[in-house]
Image (cartoon, rainbow, N blue to C red):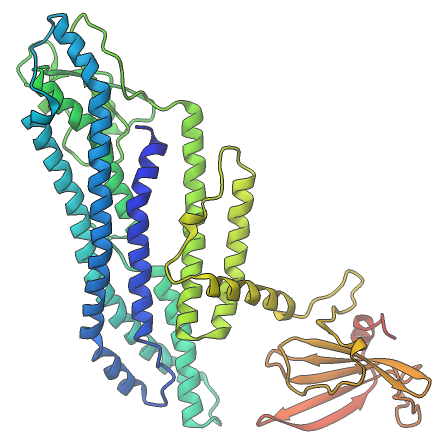
Length: 511
């Protein structure tokens, strides 16, 4: 089995556990939805911790559902792969029997060695699933308690920096919004681990399941081959070789071993690194073995991948890294949407579209790759959220900041010149610039209204004197500016003045 085939087969299982991670995270956020309650942080903390039992019960049901799907797929895949391997091996073994080079063996369906090997493979697969389930259940619980604790502690930090003039309710609500936003971002980055190794390193569901399942699938060929060789009483095996082998594998590759550990000519199997995680046929090992009979050439069924295939494999790994980045960003969008934070959702949407563009460009510029949108999917990121993310990206592109043309003039976000008479809103979209036409008798001028980061009108630029130069004796043609001051949500002052040199440059196209 090639690296690509093994990777694609492992994807089916790792995708299920990525979905499980997303479902557990969404459920955790569901329990934080009422974060805007006007209550003290310590009271909110106790309220959330009281929901821990309910959360845990819900997570058990979610895990059980995904586990059933994973077990069914992995057992079916192992059975199919074993059948394919044995189907390729058996004709060669039968040929050896006809030539009198080995003893006859029982049929495959009656082979105790095959059944024993399959039992071991099924157990290994189930162990992977059980480890993931146990780890993700308690890690989901820890993630929830940590999230609540972090929100409360972060909120208290924000409280110190907010305005002293705001009311206690406003302070409490605003600080918790900021705390939740920050903590959800951190929560999304960490995710929910599926495995913790001896060094305390936490493995993501995709990383752990992918590695474990690939190793299990990789064992199928070798284990089936050795089990059937036992049936035919063939003890010698040859190990293939390739450049860049790991230290332990490098000592064993290209050699012939006696699995019965009796030969005086060949190395004994128990002297090899077989059975060690980083040894021969261990985790991520790319070596293969095949039966060996002195004086007889046995076809090699599992050749080393060619250079072109290796190159494509590396390219797909880069693609998968970009896909993971897109998935994580989609998950962040989904979490902010679920919690109801519009501003954070907009920011996350902009980052998502950037990462999708990066992935799209990489795939289109690499021959042999094609977009795998199924690997970019996130549970909970449905058509509604997708459309909302696209709209948010367009909104931020338009109103995210003030933009300028190449000649230095400001870009208008809202051209209302053809609307006739309009009433200019005092509050609108952040960073918006509305442009309208004003007619006074035979005089026509262009007016521009600028809005700040809070969406409040703060300046107007007028290209003329509103038909009365005496009242607006500014500039050459009556061009002038109005500045607006706000306090407690209301305009408290308006001043009229000449344009600055910077403002003249920004609006030179209408002056």
